[in-house]
Image (cartoon, rainbow, N blue to C red; front, side, top):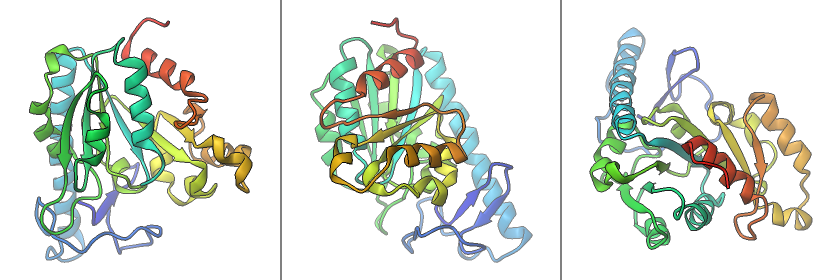
Length: 264
């Protein structure tokens, strides 16, 4: 599905129909079929809309499964190297004793990130997107559905889906979550909300990570916040350092409220 995207108004475009930022997709066959031979025009759009509709239907089924067990589910997204897994490690260390947490760990290949999360009091279900041609650059609802048997939903309060590191595709696919969050590092540059507005516009909370590096970089945190606000006027922006722990208490508080847990 990585060769096309959907705008907020529901219209669908194939990548290549117009500029899509500086993100390139691998030229590989996706596990749900190679869409390159569908031609152009209305026929191609009909096929792509059908694929999105199929995804959305299964996303609704995933959400119903979570709802039936009283689980709140968060789709955690970021670019590669933002510190998303480190944030998740700190989150499990702080909250796994309060909340029964399950993690769906999405990655193109390897179990390196899943291994970092195991032994921290949470259930972890690994989801590799590699299909022999490279691997998907995002998770979709069918993938998440296949990962659900790796979790005992009956015993969970919160499921965190760690999406594949990518600032474009993950935001375009409903996977059955109740909310979206993203980790945005000060090392990525202040322009990213303007270059990748779909991601920043879609999320319910932004963690501005690696603030411990600000004294060593030519960055202005107020500019980062301003650029996020240009595309998302309401999402809380939480400056944090996953390495030092600075600011993480605000993130933990947001998660407790999201999961319906009593404040501490």
